[in-house]
Structures are given as C-alpha cells and as structure tokens.
Image (cartoon, rainbow, N blue to C red; front, side, top):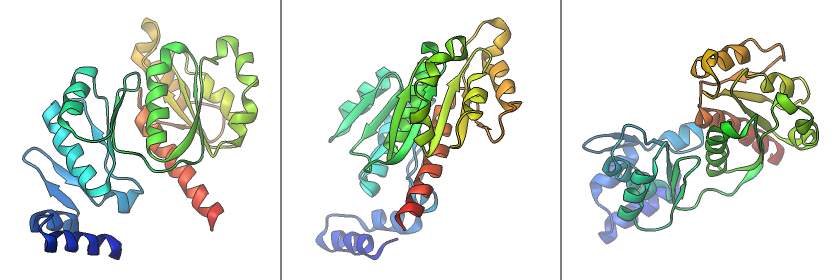
Length: 252
C-alpha cells in the first residue's frame, strides 16, 4: 500500500470517520462480508481492482460488494447485470451510477483516464452484446477503445477500410460467431496481438459457439489467442494488460 493511502486511512480513524475494522480489512487485503470475501489487494497485484460478476448474485449482494470496492478505490463495476438488478442496485447506491444495457455492465464512480488503444471488432450485429461487453469493460479498465462493428467474412471488404485503425492498436479483440473465421483473417493482416472471442450466435451445427471456438483454436494465423465462448470480459481484461504494459514501457 502507498504511504499516502495509509496516512489517509489512519487519519480517518483518528477523526472518527472510519472504523478500525475497515482499516484492518484494507491492511489485510480482504473485506469480509456475510456472503462474500472481497479481494481488496487485487488492484496492486493485477493492475485493476476486483470486478463483480453479477450473474447468480442478488441485487443486495452486488450492492454490498460494489459499496465495499468503491469505499476502497473510489470506483468499481459489475458485469452480467440485468436491467432489473441494475435498477435495484442504482437505487441503493449513492453517487455516480451508470448502466450500460447492451453490455449488461453497471459502473459506480468514474473510471481511470484512458490510455493507449484497443480495437474491438465484431463479425455481425448479432455478436453486438459480447462485443459491447468487451468494449465497455476495456474502457472501464482505463483504455481508449474503438469499436468496429459488422465486418464479418460474408462481406470481408467491409473490414479492409478499417485496417489502418486496427494496425495502430496495441491489441485487437475480434468477436465472431457462426464459423468463427474473422479472427484468422484479422490475424493474418495486422501485427498487433489478436484476442478472439467466439460467440454462441449461429444455427444448429454451431453448437452454441463450440464450432466457432474450435475454428479459432485451430486458426492458421500465428499468434491468435482465444478466450471462452461469449467471454467479452476475459478478452477485455487480457487486452487491457497488453495495452497498459505497452503504455508503461512507452512512458518510461
């Protein structure tokens, strides 16, 4: 922990503005809630604080964890939050709350300033929800993001007009369902790292994204990395690590 943060916490205890138990949580790196153990040390280890996975949690549980994260870092967000839960969490939390419905991401507070460039590319409009999750999460992690939509291989000439943008990125996320071919095309045309996201979009033999996943894993374009089906969050976090590391090197 930075000395300035420690002094701030101890000063808050001395003034009676914070409980000793709250400071103990921060020093331990954990916050013990009735239903969750919040990892307060993740930001120092991974470069960004814990992100709440909203699916399977109640609105009250999401609220509790977000409140604790915001108290420590001033900003937090949750993924896979439906509109009903988002409304309940927003009503319970004070301060700046924003909901991104297509991405199903709920943010509390203001994210860090954006640096570098990540480009998110989607093959079709039907892949938009996963692409928007990737783009939104990448922005909230502090990255400049450009979204290139609906440029799949059925009309691959649509992609060519945007290749200069893709080539300037520090990392490119490619989201595709159906035959999952777009990451191979992109990976064979540009130098930046390509992270492929298969989606569950497609007809029966797509097997809810399994066909796209296997196609991406068998890509003949060297160096294409693949995350799980519909995992826009995982792709965004990986791209953010690549982008932030490059930005740190360029700044030094």
